[in-house]
Image 1 (tube, protein in one colour):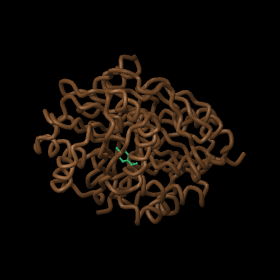
Image 2 (tube, protein in one colour):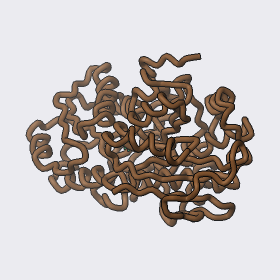
Image 3 (cartoon, helix red, strand yellow):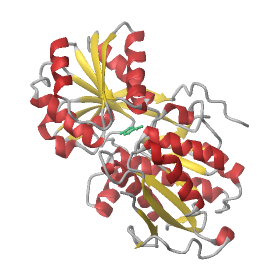
Length: 396
Ligand code: PHB
């Protein structure tokens, strides 16, 4: 199902006015017209909640700044990408050509994000990625107009290698969905773990977005590793964590994860998630003013607890605000706009965030444990970690 709707953000409202497709493209022209953001996110399927949280975060940041970018009103056009990579280039092109968006915001799924990267590079449209961790987006495919306010899949996974080794684990089985994000997360973990002398003895993959894990869990039980490392997110993470506990594995073979395993999922996972250790660039309980005020505002606006996806959308909003304020809303001043975005320090709920030359966040990776239905920060697994950005040659 393809949803296209336009949300006109108005001062004092979060939801704004939603109209059917067909709203006239522009009310005025040039640099006094609204700045249009094309939010291409999954609103259906296993990543639906992640897509909604990301857009909520973006709206919250804009709302807190008068719904303006560099003095110009903002309009958000949303499009459901269904986490379907094959349709990504056409969808992104439609937002740019038919909906005349100035900025692309998206997405969650690494494969879909790579389709957006291709179109952003071809058209020179500004792209801000609020989740997808696809390494190439800020690696070999990096570009002056491509920014990310989230992470690379390597970033939260690599530090778990040392955490696992320090816990005394030597033999680990990994399990994930067979697509870019899962494979890059496992590779990141493996790099950290095996450099120290550990061994990933078996890499199990299941097709995305399958959630039938029984045969895989039986295989894990038979292999008897010291621990399991995994990447799952959204609906798949809920199902995997519950199935792992139901199979009786939770108390026998520790389950470790890239932190998405327990983001936006804890209510549904319940007791099955208690005690799980994960690494991520955020934790609910981070005791800093920016996190407290963000979480309160998010809950007030949307009636639910914030998670990493809300944080990343919010930070994308703050980054756009910093950039467009610097050029007073002039969408044509690209070099100055990108320079301001690149140099911005974002007052993120995750802690102050800066960007590497490849336009990916440099950030602390926290070690978290699920305690009492919350991701509690119990340490910093890697301070100020930058992705190695292998293969990025940023044109001057
Ligand atoms: C990705 O596809 O890059 C991805 C999806 C969901 C997550 C994290 C990464 O939670």
